[in-house]
Image 1 (cartoon, one colour):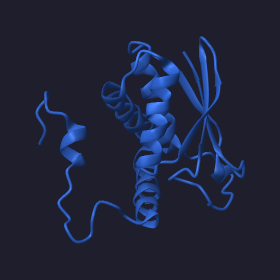
Image 2 (cartoon, one colour):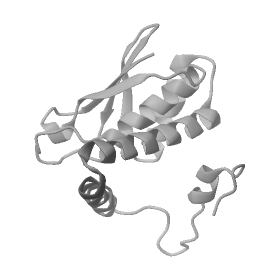
Image 3 (cartoon, one colour):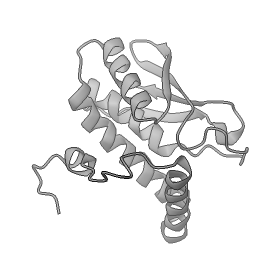
Image 4 (cartoon, helix red, strand yellow):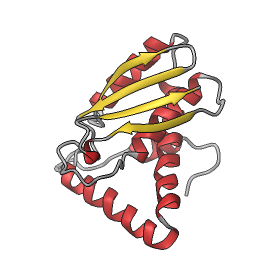
Length: 164
């Protein structure tokens, strides 16, 4: 168990797999991701399940924000974009940036790139991640984030809009 002061991200980042390494096939990730959502929906309902993934992403975003912080939002987002690509979450691109709005695309999204059109947007974790990153940058003020496009909804890319 983690103490309140322990850096959870650092603790869970440690991997000891000298033969198999740190990477897993995307199929395994998606099976874990999608079936856990299905089971959570059965237990708590769809909205509650979506909030769990959104909040998990948001917490990771805040932790990453601490590690990748830069006072310039564009530079900060570049750092985040590099992290997302290195960790194979997706290719994060800034589409729009104003004083109170950020729109990013996430191409090759880990959750849904290449999936058949299932008729709904499903990237709650990624939406939360972007929200947490922006919340950290703006001094932990609450932001409104929503997924405005999703591969799984037949829209060809994932897109997250954040108002702050």
